[in-house]
Length: 273
Image (tube, rainbow, N blue to C red; front, side, top):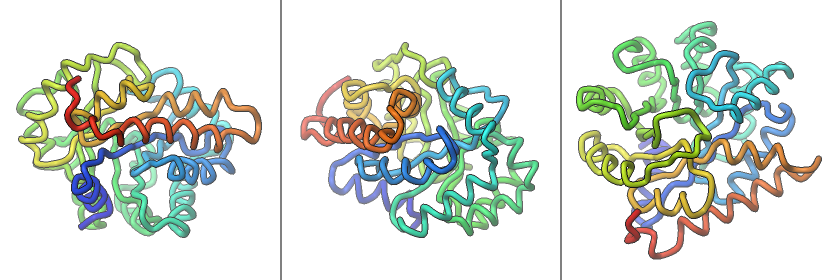
């Protein structure tokens, strides 16, 4: 059983939902990524999505783009991201880490070299935004051989055929994009999420985590009523941006604790969105 599978299984047994914050590796500076990862865990994170900075993103909104640009200016790279995961794993053997990014850095490193490096570093899952299941057979095979889950995106526009492809190729969990837009957008349609998630979960046989547009405890709680996990990204980056020097880790922990408390309220499993 992979760390991701074990995490979702244990949460389900306790009637809890996964809290999955996103953090851009190297933002606001490389030396702070590891303390911020620790801060996320201290605040109640079950899984960490660690973004690999890339210069030409297609799914990231302005907030995550700013974070990536700042990290790249300071020399952050895919190899340095793997080093950060290795350092985190040396002190935390429990919390799954999922790398989220784009195909170009992976292909520049080489699919085989990336899979081997990710396994050695302790990466649990990989989500490559621009690797649809029909175009990444070699990558899928390399990750599977390395024992790493491959996570795919589904969206409100995903067809039944696409859901079937993701169900066949994916593992770990499915990341459902809650809206037609980029990360951080504010037009979250909770009714549409509630309609789509049960069918996707039934078809894929995997937990479904929902992200994009979730910004506070109230929206996280309502999403958790129908999903297996809640992903919060842009709002975490904004919390870091707004923090005075030396306060980012403490502020991130406090913010995450508020979300965690909302998800753990007993009525969450019964509340309709």
